Image (cartoon, rainbow, N blue to C red; front, side, top):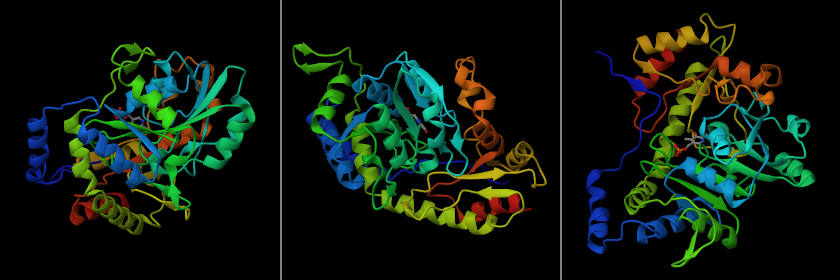
Length: 367
Ligand SMILES: *Cc1c(COP(=O)(O)O)cnc(C)c1O
């Protein structure tokens, strides 16, 4: 019997190492609301990531919703259809109209050259995604935002620890949002964070995630409950001790796939950007017409052999019932996004995957 190989598996540090953290929580009975582990994780993440301020959240989606609130974004926001649904949903939950703009197939990120033609008097921000941890064209996006007076928010759910031109990718834009969901490179079971450049902004974010409380009797905004608990923060601290190993083992898997699949007719890989120190969070392949099977035939055949790739991101958000009626969702505006969504399969990549399993995946594709 062959074992199942899933697209990802969470990294779990040794259980016995987590017990002392729990004992501390039991002892001091501080379970949530900016407890000691919460404070420590914020500090350690700032240090590890190389950012100034971070505010932890219960998950990445609430962090996205809150980031938009913190910046008082309204009207229309330019965004990508080629991402996880939470990106567009966070706009919808703020009564903001998503305006979909096509991607650059080389990075799977928003194509900056197509942003300007979609700006209207109602546009207030650009919500871009560093898809697969590939940096957006941050300089170009900032230039456009400056000209038109727009805010820039990055959905950096895939970009934990990614460095661009020798500094954290997360320093770009007005805010970056991380997800620490179980399936991400760095996880706290469920969790997320907002990265921002100044203390005042962090304070507003901290009020917003705690119902808008500024102090015991003062409520300054219609905030939400977005707080991360002490158990999740403690797990994050333990996980952080292992993150460098996790990323380096992922990178080895990435290297094996590149070597094994390089030159397979009809299989295209993401190209390497010299300016980026990535996190090997995903390994997408793009199945072109040249390949002997269609993308879906390959996907099904892999499944028959117990290899569960995922078609991230298919279907496009712009094809989902709650968005497909938008003018910006039409296929002729989103040609590249549609093409890529029809070609992609993300291969299994995680730190505990066996060499033999990686070979099995390669053999299935290289045939
Ligand atoms: C995972 C993910 C999210 C949502 O994060 P959660 O922590 O699961 O709420 C948002 N955007 C992208 C691109 C993601 O991959």
